[in-house]
Each structure stands twice: as C-alpha cells, then as structure tokens.
Amino acid sequence: MKSLMSILFLICIGISSLAHAELRSLRGSEVMNGDVPSENFRWEKDRKPLPRHFVQQPPIIPHSTKGYLITKEFNKCLDCHSWDRTADTGATKISITHFKTRGGTELTNVSPRRYFCQQCHVPQTDAKPLVGNTFQPAAGLVKK
Ligand code: HEC
Ligand code: HEC
Figure 1: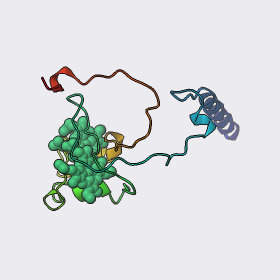
Figure 2: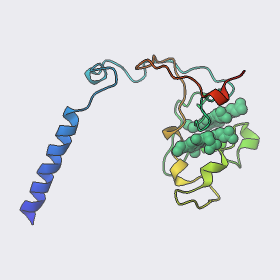
Figure 3: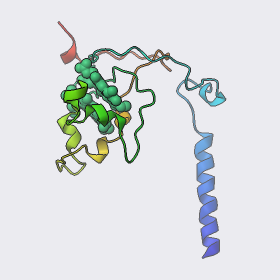
Figure 4: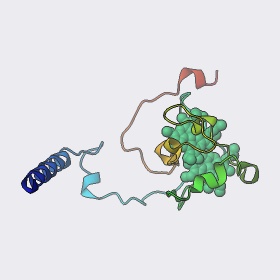
C-alpha cells in the first residue's frame, strides 16, 4: 500500500511539473520574469456606475476596493451592498439573481456562488492592457 501511495505521489509531482513547463503569459515571458510589481498602478477615482458593454456583463466596480477583505466570516462588499445596508450606504443593492443557488433555490441571503464578488466584478486602475483587443460594445447598448 505504502509503495502504491508513493508511486501515485510521484505521478502527481510529474504532472504538476509538466503543467509548469507549459505556463505562458498572454504577452510572452515578461510576467514570468517577475518584472511587473503587482502594486505598479494607480486606482481610478471613485465615480458613478459605468456603462455596461454587453447585456449580461457584471457591472465594473466604479470605486477603489483597496483593503476590502472577503473572508469566510466577513464580506466587506456586503457591508455596503447587501439589501439591509443600501439605504444607509447609497450603494446599489446586489441583484436579485445573486440569491439563487446553483440548483435554482432562492435563498434569503447572497448565494455561496456569488459570495466572492471579484470573481466577476472588477475595479479599475490605470494599468496598461496586457494585450490589445478590438472589442465593440453590443449593438443593443450603443446610443443611437
Ligand atoms: C463603503 C461602501 C462600499 C463598499 C465597501 C463597496 N461598495 Fe460598491 N458601491 C458603493 C457605492 C456608494 C456605489 C455607487 C452607487 C451609485 O452611485 O449609484 C457602488 C457601486 C458598485 C458597483 C456598480 C453597480 C452598477 O450598477 O454599475 C459595483 C459592481 C460594486 N459597487 C461592487 C462592489 C464590490 C465587489 C465591493 C467589494 C470588493 C464593493 N462594491 C464594496 C459602495 C460600496
Ligand atoms: C458569478 C458572477 C458574479 C458574482 C460572484 C457576483 N456578481 Fe454581482 N453581478 C453579476 C452579473 C452578471 C450582474 C448583472 C446581471 C444581474 O443583475 O444579475 C451583477 C450585478 C450586480 C450589481 C448591480 C445590480 C443592479 O441592480 O444593477 C451589483 C451591485 C452587484 N452585482 C454586486 C455584487 C456583490 C457585492 C457581489 C459579492 C457579494 C457580487 N455582485 C457577486 C455577476 C456576479
């Protein structure tokens, strides 16, 4: 049994080192050389909510989130954005879609699958885009 375990262990190590070998950043090797300090940007100023670019888009965060912690016990975002806080904070209520579980059950509080807000909502900084793109907003959202 013991030797079977060590063989499995060695296979796992083998697979993970293979995965490392194939890791590539979008713009080549720069990121891997460690030349981009993670704090090398400035937060954009807080402002009104920004326009969306496609109908299903999670809205972009229009304010700094510096130091906003999300842990198992505490969620700084919900401190302002949960339905019982927005009257005092002026923040947008989290959407009603955020109460539905993966299985379709409606909860009385935010669903675990929506708990980690920054999985979908991103704040803005003056960081240069890693790669160019030609994305155009969806036709239904462009002012005529
Ligand atoms: C101190 C209170 C506060 C905290 C904490 C906070 N927000 Fe906000 N948030 C606001 C306010 C106020 C607005 C702007 C509402 C307005 O002007 O209509 C806003 C706007 C937003 C919007 C834009 C909504 C839209 O309709 O476009 C998103 C998305 C958002 N916040 C996400 C987050 C996330 C994610 C976190 C945690 C990382 C967070 N917020 C933490 C107060 C807060
Ligand atoms: C799995 C992706 C995902 C996660 C995680 C998530 N959101 Fe959202 N959020 C969305 C999408 C998509 C929309 C726009 C469509 C909708 O309303 O469901 C949205 C809409 C919103 C809005 C705008 C509501 C409105 O009425 O315009 C706010 C505010 C918001 N989210 C805050 C949060 C906060 C705070 C968290 C963390 C507790 C969070 N979201 C977690 C995807 C997500």
